[in-house]
Length: 112
Image (cartoon, rainbow, N blue to C red; front, top):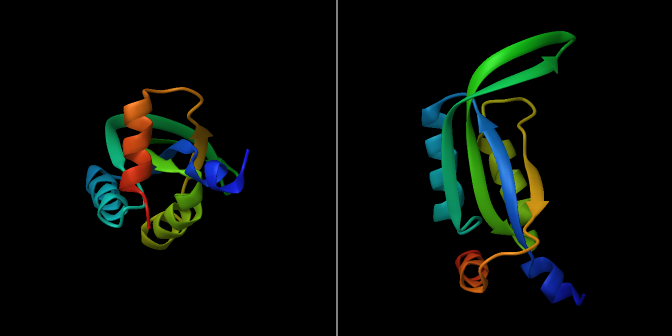
């Protein structure tokens, strides 16, 4: 795959946030900055995780962001800079298949 096609590959990125307000703020930042085309916020998820040697169970909000591989590093930097967590979750999954028009919309909305 040529480099330009690889950077245009669509991704879904998961980010958890401690509150609805934080999720809303982060979502607005990434969409306004054209780093993500869309942000979906799922409220009231429960995360169970080990942190500093202790198992925790916390209520969080889940952001489901749609972007491209070429914008991932910008997205990661923005989230890391503006997130309340010391180590925020920022994980990406390739979109293997999808509506051609929707995938093109993601590419158009995330162009620098």
